[in-house]
Image (tube, rainbow, N blue to C red; front, side, top):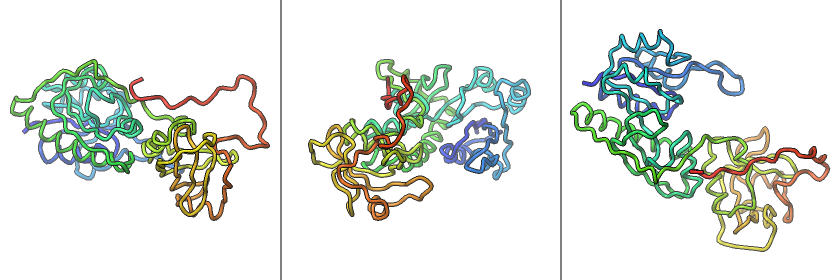
Length: 333
């Protein structure tokens, strides 16, 4: 049975940790240090640390992977393999050198497509109907190592990052066990990635969440799905932010300026875009709860003709040369 060190941090890594426990000898778990979480900023261990402790595993949370005491402890553990799943840091060569088999990584995309920190929301935002998981050998270039195994996973029309991520985590865990078995048998392949197929999936930013109504309705609907659960798409109603949790592109067109409210009522909020119209179905006002757009409109009517995303009529003008909010970067650019 392969002896390994498991490196991971968020909930996405939990199915893989439990699968590794069933298929191998997990010598220790390496994860990020405890950090403040939530509105109360309470110092909380990462999900992987909490679950590993429940299993009685040794948990290492070094501030630096290169710290001499961390490297010394890893050498003492004598792992055959390092397994990395959503760890959140580049693993340096010094760490991989402690394991004769080196390291492998689970990445939630069909590499070389969507290398980077946010492959799941980038695939949804692009309107893809398929993504997948890849097990690859670790290299010093991010997500660029040779591929061991891949498996495709469909993206459903109503998928959000919140719904797709757990499916990919479970699929990836099963594929990880298969890869570990191949490594143990000495039959794990090494398929180089095609440089011509590389696209990038940079980390999401809050600036991307503000809807640009000049975009096409289908792209805005996809972006809303991609930004659930974070950072959540939003627009402004008379200068006040309104989060948009769920929306759909409508098969209708008009001549209204982008951002103009066309209809509002029990069906939701219909807004003109650069191409087509967007039906806003679920929203959240500041300091309020998530609710249907129809519920919100009953207490906060928005008249047709209102332009969303525009500043308040009585708001002071910004200073000359004020920086504009950046547009949404496209994956692979």
